[in-house]
Length: 114
Image (cartoon, rainbow, N blue to C red; front, side, top):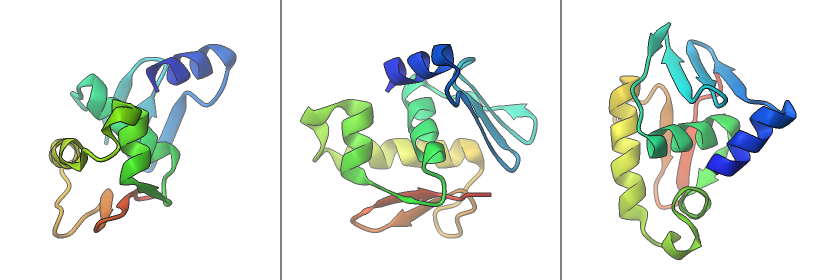
């Protein structure tokens, strides 16, 4: 995923996504929410970029795990749950009443499109 982001940035592909107050810049490896920088780890950033690039659409757990952790980890959903929890905390999101990351139990996650 990192190589894909880097290649897209160099080829003039979409290296910046804006979803309302959330701005993600792959070329600068930076995410901002309401003008404030989000301090994300590399994996958190990759996860946010993947969800944002599919905003409004369901992304399956297997697709996320394969893209971020590799094909050997497609059944390791505990990794994903931990990172989703961390990402929600940094976005100020609440799993009970989500604003950004919506869970489709047993299937995957969806990032709000606005």
